Length: 81
Image 1 (cartoon, rainbow, N blue to C red):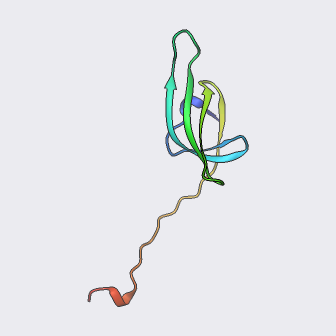
Image 2: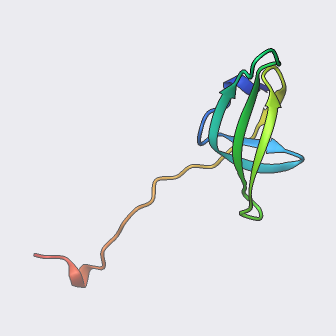
Image 3: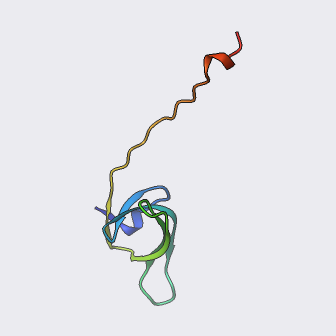
């Protein structure tokens, strides 16, 4: 579980039961009000973006992501010899 303060751009989280990628994160402390974290997220399943607010101490679940290194291969007929 992550605190909302620990969110960073590029992290994958679960929001409303759907996996999402964090696009932007801003920590705000307006006047006498409590601090909050405002984040722009993009849902992985639908591709839709949403602007959401979390209390600075709210807990979020980080999701597992799969990363890979793409391999660029050139067919042998195009390689210089």
